[in-house]
Length: 158
Image (tube, rainbow, N blue to C red; front, side):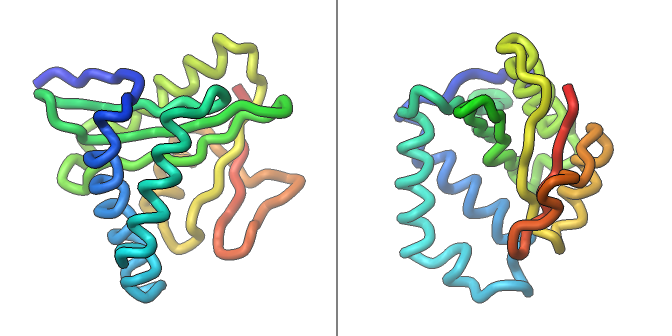
């Protein structure tokens, strides 16, 4: 089973939104009302956001596919001299299979090619699985802004 990472296209949007909604449910469940992460209004907002990200000049959306099936997605943007990992999601059934690491590596490789020296992200504070993943990959608390509401702000020095 070969893993392929490629740039997303508009044809991927439905699958991306489904994966995003499924992944978010795993860490928001028990912390937020279901409508806040999986209700129709939120799914619509998510679809709009992903549509903009796929079309944006300053953003990149990467899809991870195994045997033609979307199993992960990552998005980042670089603007005003700052690189931000805005999303990294793996289908829960594919956790701990290397998909997240492959997406993370594809992102950091792209950042290094552009000369980025650091990157930032926000992670939902109760999402200990994601926090552990990012710590394993070298992310640490951002010394300038360690928290943004319910999210921790992390920084990676490249």
